[in-house]
Length: 362
Image (cartoon, rainbow, N blue to C red; front, side):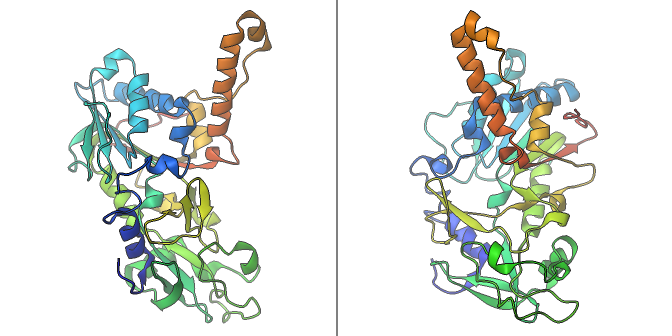
């Protein structure tokens, strides 16, 4: 890897997906060894996706071949769980695809087609699902300088940052529409919201010119994710594309960004040397196409039958083993739908081809 300064998008692309990158090395336990997603919390997540796939199947009229595409498939854990939870008539017609830039893991079901890139546009009918994929699509970072001017943040492999040229062109247009830094006011507290790895907020005593942004504000420039999601949706000729991720909307953008790293289960300073995951929350509202539906994971999983209700105490007397199993299942459901945790994740549903609308209505 070069030691020259570059933008965060190029640096993260190399660190995550280059030779020997965090996701492409194929060594060790994969992402599950560094962070815990909904997929790893409980089989109930895969079971919920199986329920969603069955609803898609019904809406499509039970086609002879039903695609199930897992984008950012990791080691295939989600696909394996969904296939195990499907009823036999649906399982017999499912064609599963894993889209992942890491090598195919040993022992994966032979039915799964392993792809390094998305399938061809308009080639599939069924469900495409991306769990915590878009947050790992690399993006550039902008930060306002002492005059409130948004500039690209440049970084070296050791994580050292400095400000580069002013943001312009498509990057500036995206910020103006979706993350307008100039909308911030001097009520923000730079000291309380600086993130690990940040170039650091400017002196809070130094204020920008009237009508401009405060110094030290940060934003992740999300149009590469908008384009990535549009390409993913475009693989379907009919069906439903859905994604679940850390997310925020235009009215709740964090003033100092969300860029961070994860290693061995802990949040760490983002260093683009391949040693850690590099992630940033997703502006899902910017990704949404016409007719898309946005909801929280709590709302989505409740609509798919995942509830955290405790089993009746009477079961403890009549069938203690069943009570313990039900209690564990309820605990996992509660974690998946916790409004202060995984339940706050954003889900984006994009119907394709005129069907598969309203599948998660309450």
